Image 1 (tube, rainbow, N blue to C red):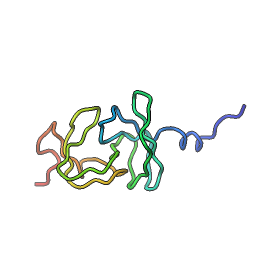
Image 2: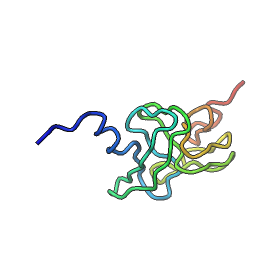
Image 3: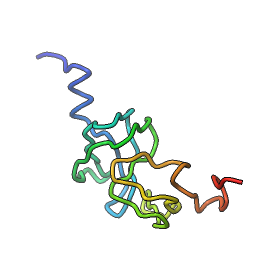
Image 4: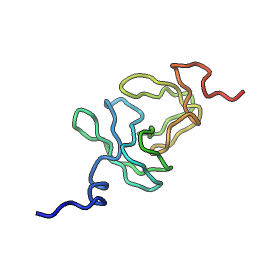
Length: 111
């Protein structure tokens, strides 16, 4: 029996995890580059449809699972974590440049 190659494991393993079906973002479980195929696995063991990374997404950062409109609630772990400050296409990096936290109102706003 042969040992799987690292490249084979990286392409067969999930690229992102999400907590629940209504989540609008998932978390990258490895560094992603534009064009990388992404399979999103839910923590209950099922998986969502695949998409392609539109932007570079570092390990541990959020990825949009569907198109998000400016002002729309962003849901992670089944909870509203903030709102999109710009339109965010599915497969894009979601971070302080396009997300306003509900936890700390005013955080990330430019003075």
